[in-house]
Image 1 (cartoon, rainbow, N blue to C red):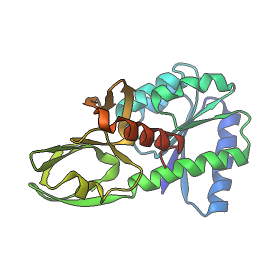
Image 2 (image 1 turned 45 degrees about the vertical axis):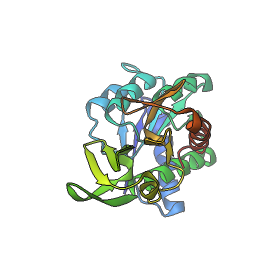
Image 3 (image 1 turned 90 degrees about the horizontal axis):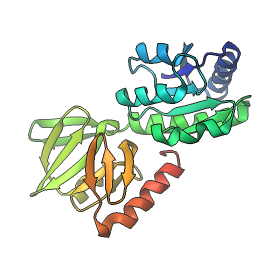
Length: 236
């Protein structure tokens, strides 16, 4: 079951979101659970990575939504985050924290359902896709959501995941053929990155999970095109 966190200090707005989630769950036959937090400070201090989607108000006491989101990204760089706001211009800086989208109050159900559709597709594609790789440590099961980037060097591939790195004898082409289309892109002959893990792109460098990788000239156009397409589709 997918769990949605509502981080909202206004009780009336939080109730509207809960009602929308219940209606969505009934109409789509999609089992959903809800956890509510009255402010960003409570959400971060209690964060246990038990949620799959976050709906967060930007204007909150103690810790605003943007500051809370920055803290959240230190723990979880992938969870779909949708901002809730009274004014659209407050959500402009959402790209800094990889926000999926934003909704302006008062939140109408039709618009809400479209945004939640997109967030749920991301959850299901990333967290429901796994591969088995015959590495030197034995056959390992890797969750695609945890695979940050792939490195090719001297007839070997190094699979850099969140937890550890696995080495196997294979070619980049053979391995990426197993991956879901549209989620990975090569920035050079030696590196292929999970587009969901990109935190910053600048000049000829891309940053994934704190690692700086160079973008070669011959790969730059295709890499930027694929990254732009991925962002425009909301990671789908």
